Each structure stands twice: as C-alpha cells, then as structure tokens.
Image 1 (cartoon, rainbow, N blue to C red):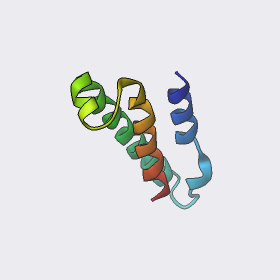
Image 2: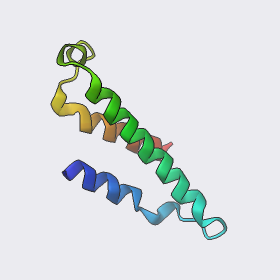
Image 3: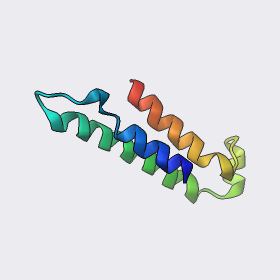
Amino acid sequence: MQHTVLAVANWLDFKSFNLSNPFKGAMKRYEQYKKYNETLNELSKLSDKELSDIGLHRGMIRSVANEVYLDDREA
C-alpha cells in the first residue's frame, strides 16, 4: 500500500505542470505511471524461480517497478 501511495503522490507532482499546455504534463505522468504498472504486472507474472534467475525475489517487485518509474521521470 505504501508503494501505491508514493507512486500516486509522485504522479500528482505538479512540477511538470505547463500553463501553455496543461495536459502535456499530465499525459507524461500518466504514461510514466503506465510503465510502472506494466513493470509491476510483468514481474508479478514470473515464477519464484524466474525471479531468482534475474536476481530478484517477490518482495522486491514493487521496489523495482518504482525505480523504473522514478528513473523515467528523471529522464
């Protein structure tokens, strides 16, 4: 739950709000949040063995998805 709250709080960050096109920033944040959800869903589909093969365990999935989301925001 905490990760979801953090992701939503980051999504609502208005630093990228642009008065000339107010929807551009919102659409960018939406696309970034979509990537977060896709990463979360794809990693969740993997078995414990597959996760182990890539050096992860199930408890790390949200953290990894959040890193992808935050890295995309900084780019």
